[in-house]
Amino acid sequence: MSWDLPPLGAIRVFEAAARLGSFTKAAEELGMTQSAASYQIKVLEERAGTPLFIRKIRQIALTEAGERLAPQITGAFSALADAWVNMKGGANGVLSVTTAETFASNWLAMRLGVFQLMHPDLAVKLETSPRLVDLTREDVDIGIRTGNGKWPGLTSHYLFKIDYTPLLSPALAASVGGLHHPEDIYKVPLCCADDPWWKSWFEAAGVPFDPERIIAGPVLGTQTYDAMAAITNQGAAILTRNLYGVFLTNGQLIQPFEAMGSDGDCYWLVYSEGRRNAPKIRVFRDWILAQTADIRERERRQT
Image (cartoon, rainbow, N blue to C red; front, side, top):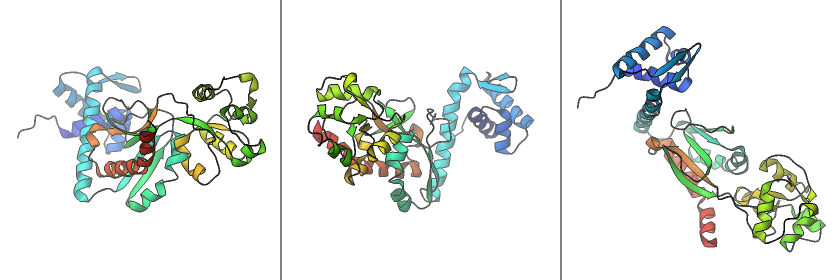
């Protein structure tokens, strides 16, 4: 078969420049001069018959044609790299995962040790910045996102719901004689009392929401910190129950009521559609789906 392709060297420079946003950085990554990288882009644009970059002072941006081409080229290089790794014998190297800090610290970090023992040749690198990583173009393998599971260009696997409910320490519950009815939550301080999740949970529990009755607890800004405040008897925290199963199992936290609030969002495992067969993505996907299977089964029984 005869492939109608431009010079592969030019495609390689285009991919790096599109990903890095700079001809200079692309040249540095590929071990060539900036002028050589610019020439390769010029060759590619001539073959394409249209500009692929908008040149600005010390800055470049993709044109509309470049925006269409970039994810396809990145996906092709990723598929080629995955095929090479697969040929050499499976999952190894570095697996980069982007996720929210709450999921990373309260669920993933507690279980990653098991995954690493299962795959000693594969190192997991976590990114927990709040930005939404473009998995079709950036050098990141897997994302764990919240939402409805629909992102263009990505394959999604459902993990579990982001349902929330009050959790607190056994000692704090005992200090007020126990919490026997949802309205009893007014007896203890509430962490981040102005969090809208509290109002949603009261409504789900069938209890009138009365801000005047709330005892304000610490305001710490994240679930992770709220959970630590709850564990240390400072108040009840409104938390995603599925993230804190370990603390419930070992008795550091209790869930006094079955009622759950929900915004409809869920956690999803996502990756570029073209990389579904990459060995390192495949082993992590199979592992995390197995780790969350019990949660999904519990959700199924409750519906």
